[in-house]
Image: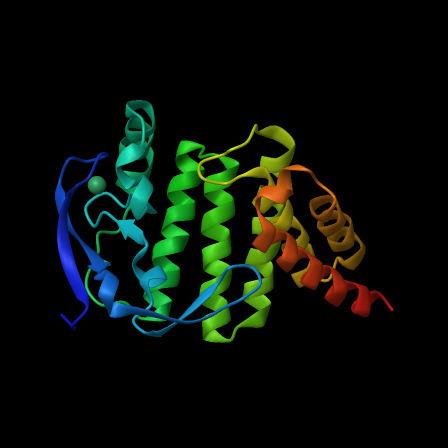
Length: 223
Ligand SMILES: [Zn+2]
């Protein structure tokens, strides 16, 4: 395996079999730049390629930090309904962009089966959008930005914050930003203004600053 990557043995919470999850050493990643929706561009190895783990035996897939967190009930559903349909193959080892996209789409399938939360769908869709951005496929990128936007909006409307590690201000920013990216400029203005004028957001000066910059850009578009 190439330098900077290593394997970790993981016991699948769905089928109880072991598989090798490939991880990236922290010192092997180097940030090149960050986009306004927090998509990070890396020199050389991109850790986002490896953030979706897939069990080769049953097909259960999830983001690495959530992989072991599913309930017994969810594991039963996946074992009974996903596993019989799974065409066994391994996504361990070095990944190219298409394998990374495949891994994240498998995460969405597992999310569907077990009825995951809106925040889980929002994150996975955003990462797929970023992968298509790296690939230069704008049409697919926007398709997944739209899906992610729907889920972030659902999180905002239905959940009480913080949701996972997501606070309300960051969620409002994301809804503004994703609306901006899909061309819903008046919606974007609404969400950015909401953030700029909120008491809660004062705790996050960098986020307010980013919202102000994006607000100006949207205003330009609306002229
Ligand atoms: Zn499994």
